[in-house]
Image (cartoon, rainbow, N blue to C red; front, side, top):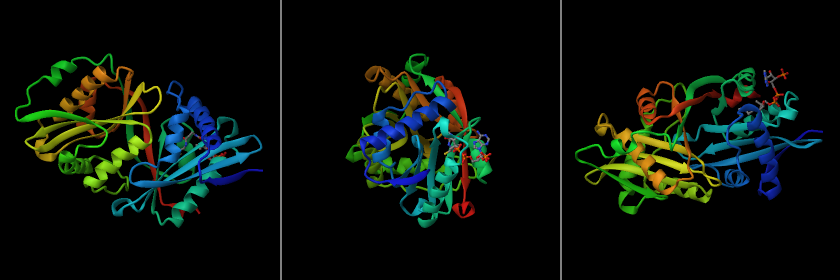
Length: 327
Ligand SMILES: CC(C)(COP(=O)(O)OP(=O)(O)OC[C@H]1O[C@@H](n2cnc3c(N)ncnc32)[C@H](O)[C@@H]1OP(=O)(O)O)[C@@H](O)C(=O)NCCC(=O)NCCS
């Protein structure tokens, strides 16, 4: 008999069961992708992403936990309409309605939480695409996932040491230093004009508390957050953030990169990203790869990434629907 149960106090057994489903699912759909570690799953289940809380469910059948679902609920006025979810069903138990039952559970919780928009990501050419389309989701954004081999990236020294008159490179680990918090919050707001297609993703207003909270959430998960910025006088003109996940740390994840509007066109995006690579090579030699995603129409960032040597890994799609339509 199948049941769907909400998980509350996450135990080691919950972490192991979630890990088993996710690892099997990733192995089936995305062969060659690094396997999530138990520590990563523990961090994921016990720390909701920044500015949000989450609800978790496990679907059990006679064989044990066969599917898992997570609904992330954003807090704060700009994103209070939004829920983001992920569902995974173990490959041995697919096409038996487990994914559908989990989706119904997610949608009901989203309605109870007064969310008008449910968003979800699926890799192209995986079962997620027909599953979401069969359930009435609309594709609102196509993204290219890109990968950079850190040891193979060429010309980094030359970019880092190129002249940028009036600008200076700085960097920090974890939470932003107090004297930079206000200007960093202002620079983070420059992410607001990133292309997000038709997605009803809302806005985040950054202030000093929010930038500190975001870094603390990453640290609490056990991950390492690195930031490189270009300053102009006392102000941050551009920055890039990278996260090294807890575990073997061989694949780092690109977070935000932005250049403040008055400073665009000066090569700062390329400069800060190259300086990040130089820092990684010097102090985190275990990091072999960096993964990033790029909206397919974000041509400036794509050009910066190609210049650094990022190569296409696969395509993903963002889907959206109103949970009212999933009754
Ligand atoms: C997508 C996923 C959750 C579906 O789980 P599932 O338990 O197999 O889904 P269901 O049995 O409830 O399928 C419901 C319907 O979706 C469609 N569907 C699901 N998988 C499909 C596939 N591989 N090919 C075509 N249609 C599919 C069908 O219409 C299916 O109904 P049917 O079996 O009566 O034809 C599962 O394949 C999975 O874990 N994939 C990897 C993670 C992922 O992509 N998640 C989706 C985004 S969160």
